[in-house]
Structures are given as structure tokens and as C-alpha cells.
Image (cartoon, rainbow, N blue to C red):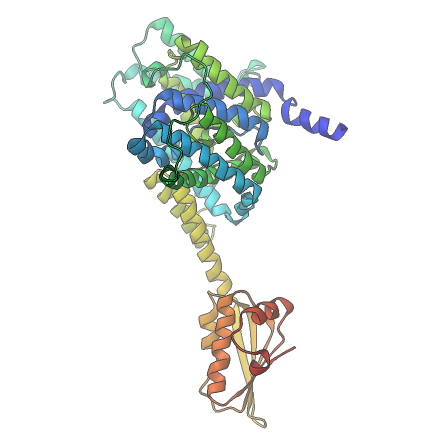
Amino acid sequence: MISYANSWKDEWFSNVRGDVLSGLVVALALIPEAIAFSIIAGVDPKVGLYASFCIAVVISFVGGRPAMISAATGAMALVMVDLVANHGLQYLLAATLLCGVIQIVMGILKLGNLMRFVSRSVVIGFVNALAILIFAAQLPELNPATERVGLPVYLMTAAGLAIIYGFPYLPKIGKVIPSPLVCIVGLTVVAMAMGLDIRNVGDMGELPDTLPMVLWPDIPLKLDTLWIIAPDSWGLALVGLLESMMTATIVDELTDTTSDKNQECRGQGIANTVAGFFGGMAGCAMIGQSIINVKSGGRTRLSTLIAGVVLLILVVFLSDWVSQIPMAALVAVMIMVSIGTFNWESIREFKTHPMSFNVVMLATVITTVFTHNLAYGVLVGVLLSALSFANKIGQFLSVTSELDETTNTRYYYVYGQVFFASTTQFLDSFDAKEALDKVHIDVSHAHFWDVTAVDTLDKLVMRLRREGIDVQVVGLNEASRTIIDRFSVHDRRDIGLLD
């Protein structure tokens, strides 16, 4: 009981001041993001805002990564565009519910453990690509062609950045209040006091004025409906978990702590299910807001809960004030996030890292930036990492031989790993046309990994036996023998496998 109480206190109330203040900052930063992502998906802004509130609150209790922020995201919005355009909001809500169920099942199956297959080069590429996308997303708010964007906006943005980076150096107070919060509140006061005609949060879309209500999607309950929503639900589930797992890994590094990826999978599913019942769109972890939270001092689940609750209070009860927040203030905060997110060490270490590392990182960055889909970038990076690894391991194979002329027997000695990437080299190392009576293949220093390796060994034995050569394979380790016994197409005695 004492251990549980201590753990509960550590996860919730070990950093109250920092969590409350960071939660306020995140709540303010979530509003324009949720509205923008709703617009991308083709739904009313309140759909994204309700989703952000529900997901943030629920994930604070059931998630596996304390201090990580989950809400409506751009990556998820892109997946649901066609579904909304072709079938409408009600089908999106149904797809959100199914997405949640799929993610819960994935968590139960412990698919979060698959994160161990994501290499550091992919993580760095993911981070750098996200930093670029976050920065690029702010450019429309700084484009002089955009309505009401001019010198006042540029001055406000510059002032916001000066506050963010300069305020922490003030004695005493600088370390107490998060500088992004000072930036947002300070610039809002200035804009209202001076009556500046610049874009604000209210220009992004109408804020909701009522609390979300529980509802069931108004769709026909039949098999055709399932076929309509299933593909998008699977896409949402996979993209959401992939982005959430990557974000959890990054927050782990930032806070020097660990997280339960499988619990996070289940938590994301539960949160999306609740969001669907409250009229919200599917969401996942947000790396930008998560970094804002951590940089502002957030460390426990309380910060995530505060962000969600304050978000709802702001948009429902204080919408008149929130709508006055200048977009320039939020642009300054997001620019700070992009600068802090980018891994600048990766540029300095580009010359010292192996070429394969750099190729995977750049491929992840380029794919993500050009597709605006973090999932595609990560999948490309993971695929290239796997191919690079297979190529490297495949090169650790050598075959030597010596001929015993008295018995006309050639002894082959195999060293290394035999699997799909090295089987060609393995097969080419043997001369089946050499006039021999016997061939002795010693694999005591080799390992057979897959069915392709077993099939290659079978082909080799068949070739040699067709030439009238007696073949013996010796030195198989236990694991190699197990896979050969299971998948070999030949009788063991016929091949001549020996211990």
C-alpha cells in the first residue's frame, strides 16, 4: 500500500506548481491547433476542441507516459479527410470509436514493444522533420499576403521570441513562471490595450459555447457501414499509435525517464473511444505540445489533466477573452518549439556518423516533409534501417575450404550468419562441379536464421548429391537444427546431418 501511494503521489503531485503552469501554457497552445486540424479534416472547430479536451483528460489517467500531451492532431486529420468528405461527420465519429477499439486490442497484444525496432536514426529524422513541419506551419501567419499580416505582426512575433528566451534570465521570477505563458498573456494585453488590427484566435473559427454531450453516431448499424469505416479506422489506429510511440520515446529522452508503451497503446484507445462518444475526432500524442509541456516544467499526469480541463474552461466559459489572443504570440511559442525540437547535434555529427545512419535519417526527414505524414516518414526510415542492418549482417559471412586428396574430400568451414540477405553468397561459395567423392560442411561457427537459409542449404545438398557426391553437414547448433528439422524438405538421414 505504501509503495502504491508513493507511486500515485509521484505520478500526480510531485511537481504541482510546474504542472499547473505548464498545463495552462499547453491549453492556450492547443486551441488554434485543434481548430486548424478540424478545418483540415473538414469538420466544425468544436469537433477538434471537444476531442482535445476528452483525449487529454482521459489519457492523463490511463496513459503510459506522464506529462505527454495527446489531442486532435494534423496527422490524424489528414487520414480522415476523405471519409468526412464522402460520408460526413457521423461516420467519422463511428470510425473514431472503432479506431479506439483497435488500439485497445493492440495494447492488449503488447504491440507497443515493436518500438524497439525503431532505430535512433529514424527517431532523429522524425524529430527533425517534425521541427521543420512545425516551423512551416507558422509561415502562413507571417506571410504578408495574408490578411492583416504586416509590421505589427512581425514586431509582436519578435517581441514574443524575446520574452520566451529572455524572461528565464530574470532573477527569481524568471525560473518561476514559464516564459511561453508570459509571452501569451503579455502580448494579448498589449494587443488589446493598443487595439492592434492583427489576426487572433477568434479568426481561426467559432469557439463552442456548450459542454460536450454523450451521443451515439447516427449511422445505420449494418455490415456495409463497417466496410466503409474499417479502412479509415485502421489507418487512424496505426498512425495514432506510431506517432504516440515516437513522441513517448522523445519525452522519455527529454525527462530521462521510462514509460509503458503498451499501456500507452491501451490508453490512446480508451481516450479515442471516449472522444468518439462525446462528438470528437480521433487524436494521438502531440510532440509539439508535449515539448511545450516539458520545457515549461510539466513532469506528471497532472500537467496533462490541467491542459485538458483548462482547455474546456477557456473555450466554453472564457471564449470572449481567448478569442483575443494574437496569433503572433502563439507563432512565437511554436517557433520556440521547432527550434527546441530540432536535433542540432545531427548536423554537427553528420560527418562522423556512418553513411547508412545519415541516409536513413535524411530519408525519414524528406519523406515526412514532402508527404506531411509522420507515419510515412517513420515507415520509410524503419524499412531502410532494416535493409541496412540486413546488408551489414549479411556481409559477416565467410566460407573457407581445404581438400583432402587422399580421400578426395573437400572440407568447407562456414563462419557467420546465414539468412535471406546472405544466402546468395553462401551458395556461390561452393563448387558443385568439382570432381569429389565427399563434401564435409562444418557449420559449427555459423547460424541459420530463417526459412530462406534452410531452403538454400537444401539446394546446396541437392546440387552436390546430383553430382554423385556424398554430403555431410556437421556442427549445427541447437537453434539451427530446430529450424532445419522443421522446414527442411529432405529426410535428415538422406541429407546426412550430423552432430
